[in-house]
Amino acid sequence: MSLSQFLFAFFVSWCFLSSTHATCNVCNSVNNLTCYSSTQMQACNASGTSTGSPTDCPSGYVCVSGTGGVLCEPEDSTGGSQADCQECNKCDSSQTFACTGTSTFALCLGTDTVQNSTGTCADGYVCNINDTQICGLSSGGVAPTCSYADDTTTTTSTTAATTTAATPSTSSASSYCAAVQSQGKFAVGNDAYTTCRQYIECSLVSGSWVGQTYTCPGSLYFSSSASLCVGTMPSTCSTSVSSTTTTTAAPTTSNPNAYCQAMQSQGYFPVGTDASTTCHEYIYCFLLNGSWGGQSYTCPGDMYYNSASKLCATDLPSTCSTSVASLTLNGVNLD
Image (cartoon, rainbow, N blue to C red):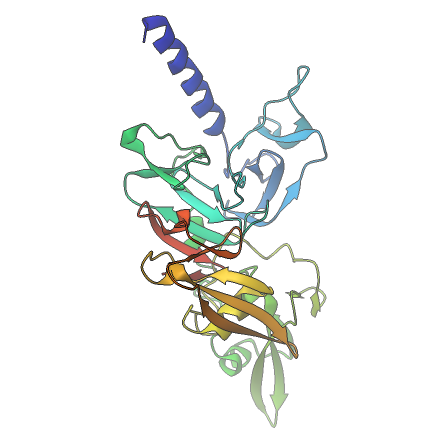
């Protein structure tokens, strides 16, 4: 390679990394918003953490973070704006995964939408949307296609606590009601896929406070303001923060019913990332008489379950690569 060719390649690479290393997932203090993807923005809470469901920009507009705040501006075609987060939270061509940070990713499950999933690349690997193995070795020349401005990935926000010392625990409904000493319905937590669907109903019976935990049916959420189960996700719910106030045991893939209760969706879902065991398995979730149930299955012979095609296939899925360190789906750890 000649010197001029090398300099040109370096310049292109620098421009590419600069555009993806802009202000993804970093809250802008001007209007308390952040760019979630090239065409989506997300609200931030008081602690400066992005929360709630992403909001789409109008057609032909892209998300840009600048001195005027986070705004949807006309796309760069004839002097328009260059989008931030161009390769962040964007499902790959096979609809298997999307890079969510320098070394983190999420599953797409055969759709163009990022699911409530957190995947981590092995040490020394970075997420690249064009890599068939999801994570590529950085020392081998693979560059991350979604680096955040602080270069820290989103793992800190996915483990943030949602309670303070002054907030009574919701792990026991009756103890919670004894602490708040008020009749009514109260939200359990702010995890959009688990505790945001739950509430505690408190009542005073014969001079003693009692409580009962309930889960909204189907895909409904509990609204504190309306004191009802509603179809629209409340602004207090977060898709990036795992609540520490959950009142139910953590679901596992060894318990299909609990697994499907966490999924809250009918269909086929992966079990794990171990090429010799769990990569051959999958769980079918269904809603029966208002309750979520699940059934475990194993692909025949030496076939593997592919989360994108939702079929048993002969090729080892990229989620079962040794470059993947960990993976969760709706709070369920996929071993």
